[in-house]
Length: 353
Image (cartoon, rainbow, N blue to C red):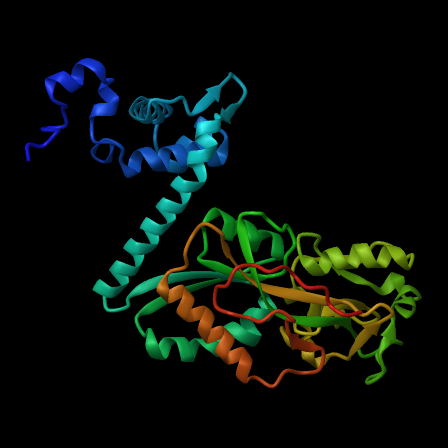
């Protein structure tokens, strides 16, 4: 059978009645460069920011978008001096193109890992407490199967971790659901109960018994707080307002600074149970809080439209296996929803009060 197309051109009779762009095989004309440029503009809502993300000049990016519009035969963006908006056709294309690019990138990443005999590099961001208590203990299990995969671990607050996952700076994160982005998947992992850690000389340092929030209110001037870009810092502000507790007398940006601060004496801090095991804080008195009982929920966080690489999935599974074998201390429990390496998000689940 004679082919309809030769060298990208239709037969003479076909060319007389069909627009040029419809006669050419699009798969040879629309490239990954066109799709990446389109997705970058759609994601950022700006040709300037998209060009910066792609390390292109604005003129080069604009030319690429015009080429794509010519090939598909439809306008994709409405541009003004102040904004860039997607046309209905572009909104339809955006999610499909994003999914296609993520699948392609994952395929190439996995192919390279196989070619390099499971070499590669993973980037993880996590709360400091989860790094010390779970991530580091899980590494021997993971490295037994992936000895040549290198790892970068960044400790950060919840807001920064979510942003880094969303921006693609890390493969996945372990943190609270603070900003709750629609384009991130949050898989419940574990939860830990809030309590107080205090200096040994503090009136609330009596071990064993639970302490009421109203008792913390009576010592409002002793409170050391955590920064508001952490889940713990948010709990400080939201809950303490109900008990007429003033702003903390001091505030630190991470749990690393808490131990020397509390060691000054006459101070207390509200912490999840897991945090109280890190940075020498386990040496200080810790009492569970009640009325109300509050929990911090921790999640495996990844991008919704990006499939995790096989090595990232293997590390998540090592985390889950390690967690399943650990004897959980009082105040720490698995999340109510079944934990899995990368299932669809089914919501937080309300912790019991």
